[in-house]
Length: 159
Image 1: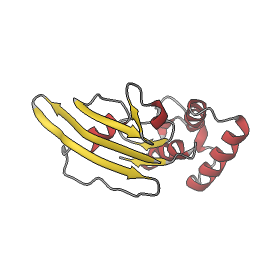
Image 2 (image 1 turned 120 degrees about the vertical axis):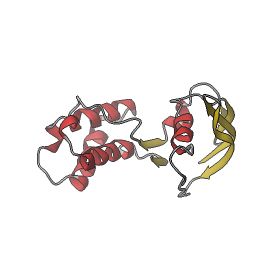
Image 3 (image 1 turned 180 degrees about the vertical axis):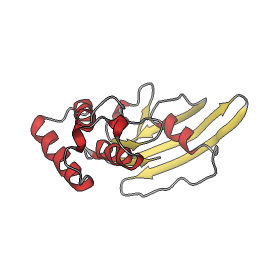
């Protein structure tokens, strides 16, 4: 797996946040994006996952240019971000089912993975029956992580 970002640029109201960013990610890499608040870390991730459009730049996934929708990339990503929180009206179980449907997991695979993940991350019985709006901040992060890795992605992004 290889993801290449070339000359990525993004500005808001005349303020340049990303200025000709070039990055390459390869399978097995562990990369941390460090910087001050407002330095463009989340903007970069939002451009990568197509939440916001960059002003310019190119994305290549496994040697292929990604133009328009980045669906091939999205299929191999698992994302935990405050920008994309779990739907508060969903129960934990509803949220994981929703993620399973997005990634087209069959029932047996979904049941095994969701059970394994929730058994590992949650001690409280019945937690998946509660609405996410009733979860603590830590529990929201855990259910977000469960959703992000449910489909066993090649790339996990933690923002």
